[in-house]
Amino acid sequence: MENERKVQANGRSGKKAALAVVCVLAVLVLGAAGCVGIYLNNMLNSINHVEVAAPVYTEPAETVAVEEVQLAAAAEEKPAYAEKNATNYLVVCKPVKDDGVMKTDTMILCSLNTATKTITMTALDAEAEVDVPAYKNYAGGEADLNTVYGLGSTNGGTAGAMELMNQTLYDNFGIEVDHNLEINMKLFAKVVGRLGSVEIELSEEEAAYLSEAAKKEIKAGVQEMDSALAQQYVNMWGDEDAEGISAISGQRKIVEAIVKEVRSEYVANLQSIVFDCLPMITTSMSQDKLEDTLWMLLPMLRNLSIENGGTVPAA
Image 1 (cartoon, one colour):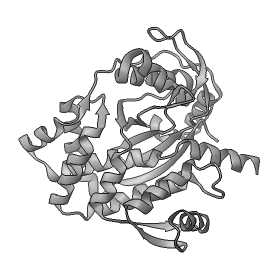
Image 2 (tube, rainbow, N blue to C red):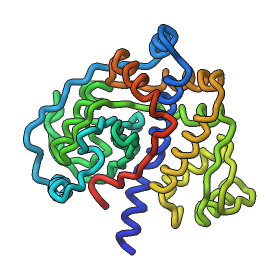
Image 3 (cartoon, rainbow, N blue to C red):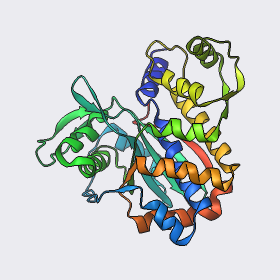
């Protein structure tokens, strides 16, 4: 029972993580589907770019998490982010002040495997205690993982946030981040509003929570959600009083629902979504690299599957 509470708590601490992923997938899917040549180039001009220094790849610290990765590799069961064909995109939401500390509870590693045509989402435990390396005016030390991005931001802006986060993930867990994306969470409402609605299969607990929040009866099972109801669905992941709610399960469902809806949209609608999304994203990828990624994804979009990679460190 205690483990279940811990898993739920960890899941809630990553509130809205899936929405960040939705935004990234929407940009990748929609950009590739609706733009070609110079038009694509012009659209991508609205995304924000920063230059991020690569981590120093030495031998990772011998933490429990690294030992787990090594044992898995020995058993030929590597985590998705350690696979040979994986490209790792770290997606976070802009840090916000909580009791005077800049925190980023939304942290998810998206591992794109071009060989298997899958994106595996691995949630990072916000409350995991990690050893943070010295960075500019920060002397280093132990900290919760959800404060690392804010520490980097304070000492080096968005690029500093990405640099310190990447180095910390490698030092503590052996994770090699290839590209970073920072998402402004206001983007979610815009995407769902443009789509009109999405269908999500609700559990009994989810339906009960939404019924109370929306002040109307909402039954378990497949339900059509507009942007307002979908926003409440996301908000419940961070509600400490919500019982029986699995944030990780909810994140996966909403990602799949939006991607499904996106794939059926007309190009004109998709372009509107892209124009809404891009200015609210900051990435370490150059415009050329982003363009190359979109063209690489184009032939596999229809068959691209989303997998659940669990959490780091493992619950």
